[in-house]
Image (cartoon, rainbow over all chains, first blue to last red; front, side, top):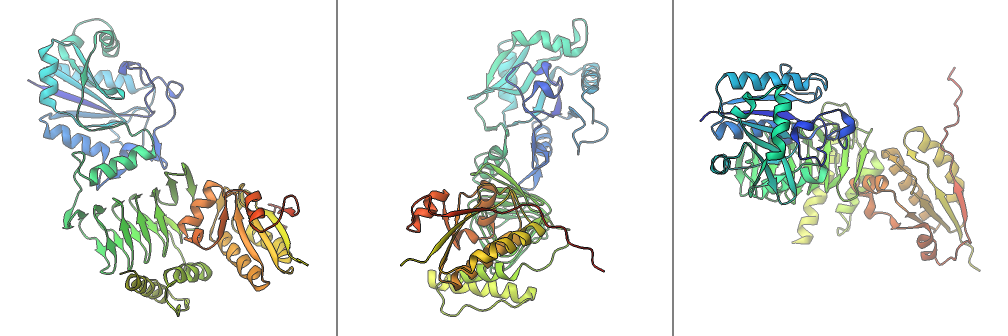
Length: 365
Length: 128
């Protein structure tokens, strides 16, 4: 049996309509662009690989070799060969369907990302064929998912575009209750939950890296200072530096090519690729990408123009303001009698933070 | 006789760069009063950089020199996030609302002066 897949990169968060053929019709039909910190959610890395690549890899592992990707409205980052505008999406989609039908496929899997969905393909096909379904749509406990399996011969027959033929099948769709892991990725909290669940082994996402200590994974070429404390589970992406006296806790992930400067704590957070997090800071319950931070508990996005705090790794920056660093250092020294005075060089600032952290550890143990 | 003075300073939306320096100049006289009690109302703050945090620390030091106290009140989510990131949330006394900050000082409302600092930066003459 031949199965092909068309994976669509969504431009909008899905509306409540269960009809996949009704989208996209323009921004007015959705609830807004599915962006996270300025980039489509599915293009952000989760433990070393983005959702799109993970989905394509998983489909290949399931034995689906013919896979195409399409972007609904010129979503950046998609292979130019498959990028479309809102006006050209459906003609491009029709063309792909026609191509696969001509190849003689039996079943067509249509997935709109969007949601992250794990499923058992064999079980799905058994269900679909067992009850003689023409179109089977995925459902979970929260409702319909943007994933359907359709009989190719149903699309071969009929008049009009393949989109219209698909639409005509919708009323006859049968529901497949998916009991595997799903995450709708509707907002920043959903994304954080996905990373958290992946680190706790609650879904099939595997970190891209080796387990350097129990429940701590690191990609290649990472540099983790010996004084840094990493409480598993945690993920450190390829090429990332974790500075002296840093603390990484509560299932945090730091993706590739990041720089976490000395004395900083990362708790219950995701740091996206290419981000610098400054000295002596405390990032908690947040997603950070470049100069933007989303605080999940306060439900607020904050832009930081000062690259000494957070920013793109490539941005030029100077030393932290002395008042700030002196105060942060004194906080780490609160149980010590003699706090060191910060002197205005980077190495002495780092040493000050590292020494403070070690003294605090002594008093705490 | 209690000679303390209470000032509530309402910060503007943007607390960054030159704006902060201008605000600091406006606030400074109040910090030098006898036993000042300065309450910074941060409910309007939407943008804050390290200069602003530095200014708050400076205010705290100045107020302490005059045996006074400085409190932050009504932190906006943005301001709270910046202070948490820089660990300054552990340095300042923070209250959910201005009235709570005022009453914590032992004063009754409305026995305090509110100063709304201007957001506009004064035009500086071009250097010769």
